[in-house]
Amino acid sequence: MRKLIATICLIFLCAGSAFASGFSIYEASVRANGVLGAFSAYADDASTIFYNPAGLGGLEGINITGGATIIAPRSSFRNLSPLGPMGQETKMEKQEFLVPNFYGSYQITNNLTAGIGVYAPFGLGTKWPEDWVGRGSSIETSIETIFVTPSVGYEFSDTGIGNIRVGAGLRIAAHGKVKLSRAVTNFSPEGTFALDGDLKEPAFGFNAGLQYEPTDKVTLGFTYRSEVTTEFEGDATFQNLSVGFPSSAQGGAEITLPASYVVALNVEPIEGLRTELDYVWWGWSSYDELAIEFDQPIPALGGSTIVNERNYDNSWQLRFGAEYTELPVKGLTVRGGIAYDENPIRDRYVDPTLPDSDRWLFSGGLSYQVTDYLAVDASYIFIRAKQRKVTNTHEGGIDGVYTTYANLPGLGFTLNL
Image (cartoon, rainbow, N blue to C red; front, side):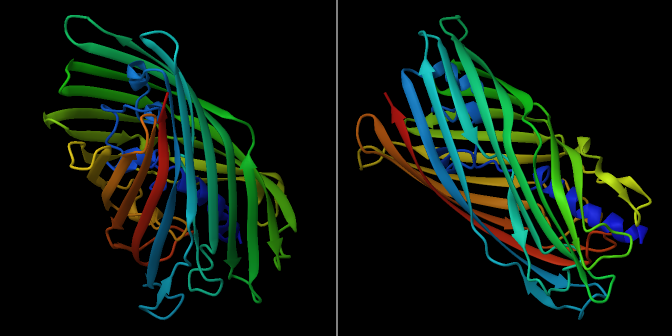
């Protein structure tokens, strides 16, 4: 019975992992999506608030940019466990998630600019058939977050060694929501467990950045984002589970979103062509365990708290993007990118709430200058994760092979006044 309640608690803890793993969302700007987020050195619109707040120091007047990206993940699972027919394949139900973003900046003086950004850096979800072989691990996981980031940037020009820009911002986790469900297959008839949770209160962190432009053809960038510790609480319900379970309870857990940094190089090798390479490091090793605490003792647990090891590894990404403006069509800019993303989850901890894997990303995008002030931006990203076979999984997982890919179209605008 203790293992059963531990497995139930893991569902909430895996919801946390959906925040702090491969479902982090780097697609924070439609224009930057076109170069796969390789934007921390160039960063010449208000979305620099996310990619590198130092870029604010180089913006003039009023800059507004916004848009949305649709994330459409697709995943399948081939069973290698004794819970069902060997080799049986199940497809995750199709879902689409709309991820919005909005940024605005205002030039206070010639060298000082302030701005604010609203975006969703962590989220997504999975939904499997209610009768599938892994229903005891997960049926549905849905997660939402919204961050607000007021920022400021300053440019030191005419230094004699090139332009230097610095910037910083306050990262505020203003909204968070999680919804989870799974079957409890240890009883006959089967029971069910569900959880609806919310961010208890706003959580805070910061980001800071530096850009160095030795010439107008080369820019170096560095961005640091701090950890953000969030606290979630929710209502858990237990149906058809009368032995050792209450009908409902409240539970809560702290989830620390890891620190990260970016080192970037942007070069203009020929007129009108900008290329950038970004190295992104994620400090996932800070996510070593999570504890869930109920507001009442759970008889089947023998207490009100359970601790679960996660033991994630640090990970990295390489992102390369290019943008070209010297086209026959006046006002048209085209973009493209390629990236490799190393996932931080060890095989033992992979489960259906987050079928993550190392992945390749490919992108294309364009902008069209409709007027002197307004441009329309569009982008498309294709993500192909490596097929991943997992065995000897933890109690919340299931042995098998995951195959995952995703399509991410986006549409937005940029306004310069």
